[in-house]
Length: 403
Image (cartoon, rainbow, N blue to C red; front, top):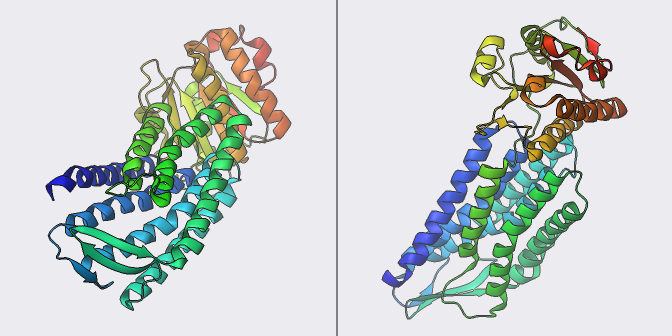
């Protein structure tokens, strides 16, 4: 097994790394449809890599001869195809839910359909394995320490065309978003998706067509590069973070202040602003906030344990933005628009931005958000500004309702 040890090691590390990345994204935003879609994508790919590592570990030392489906190696090989069957629908699901193609409600149904396909696929393959009647392969044998399989018509007539049809549809959506982005950040995310899928696609095509007779299956190896690209997208560029969350403890009755949809409001007392924000969120409304204050302080003081919050900070650690940077200056209005579009009945608070950036930049960003909200009649914007800046901000605050 010495010659296969590097191959097996890379497979195992790739599978575990991708699985860990999926759990990290899911844990970061548990209620996000986009996070769940990414997690569902990582599961079959990680399973393929880990099962392939297990299968190759068992091959060396196995005597030559014909194998039954119930022998360990063919059985693991067949169950690998539960993962393979799911890659197509999971990939298309990921593209639909992450590229702004469908609404929030439709995302839930797409996720459910993907889970249903997973359950049916697992059931069919489990049944045929227990019945010792393979439908993906026709024979299994070991010759000179090499594992040889014959693939059946079901594999070529159904599995490959079905998966590639879904994968190509997903790639089509990626290309659409590259050339038709609603914002520069959507183009970047689409480019990350494209860069991540191409290595695995090329590896699988080379393997299936036997363009080069590799001694091992290179498809799961190519997922290593895919994992690295996704990790960069998640860790450096914050993919999968903008998703409405509504999980605070709901209080009965009406909120103290009734804010009209599509309108903008302002307060010169940040504490009062966050009291209004927290009260509305706790009366069954989606909320997202931006502040210069420490996030643990805001969560503890106002009971906002699970609401999506970001801090204006030059350090740029997790959940931090610096609108003095051009990229983040574009990101702030974009995040607010995406959030309000996903859930129109929402409340968004922006606190301390007037002290964090130049007043001209503040006016530019808020005017952009105000005009969009009024046109679309989605979301409510609450500005918490420094009282000393109210005169300087008179032009922008004139369009907002004081509270």
